[in-house]
Length: 186
Ligand SMILES: *[C@@H]1O[C@H](CO)[C@@H](O)[C@H](O)[C@H]1NC(C)=O
Ligand SMILES: *[C@@H]1O[C@H](CO)[C@@H](O)[C@H](O)[C@H]1NC(C)=O
Figure 1 (tube, rainbow, N blue to C red):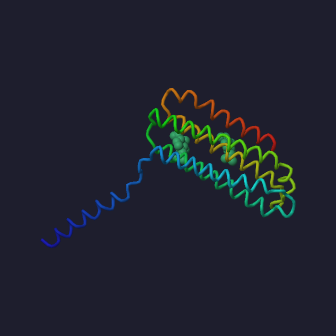
Figure 2 (cartoon, rainbow, N blue to C red; figure 1 turned 90 degrees about the horizontal axis):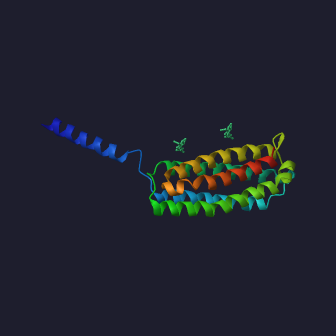
Figure 3 (tube, helix red, strand yellow; figure 1 turned 135 degrees about the vertical axis):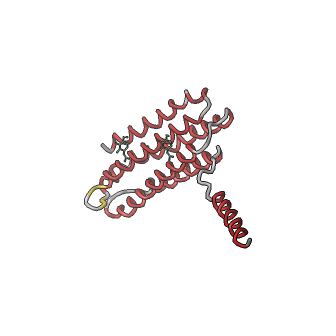
């Protein structure tokens, strides 16, 4: 009797733990929006560092910091992609909300990319290890472009059909700006 009660308790406990450990919590439009906001914030952080960056020997620490912030941005973008993947398809209203938010974000992305282009000669003079920092910036830009592409595709796939056909115009435009910035670092 005592042992069957014990078994019952154990069974309940295991059920309870399984409920707690449910791995795939459904994500919502708010998770996508919060991911896009995090990208926005990190773009602002990165832009502020870029504006202050003047290269040279004394710019080495700053170049390292910018590199770290860029890598953080890649991870923040990947997180937003994960959140987008984890939502079901968006309804019309949410599709409009997300599309507008991406269009807004586009300006932030472009101004950060413009700053990166402007600071090319400063990165040329900053030395990280044996190489100029420009080589690292190029690799970072590629990683950013790749992650941004994945996020763009993930978002477009969640939109209602009427907006899904518009999506590639926006993501294509963003991708073009990345390629343009990359040409500066070729
Ligand atoms: C999101 O889904 C796409 C397409 O299925 C996949 O290629 C990508 O790796 C996923 N990314 C994340 C972060 O979940
Ligand atoms: C970006 O993607 C391209 C092609 O998909 C790949 O060759 C390249 O290694 C990736 N670069 C980075 C830094 O992830």
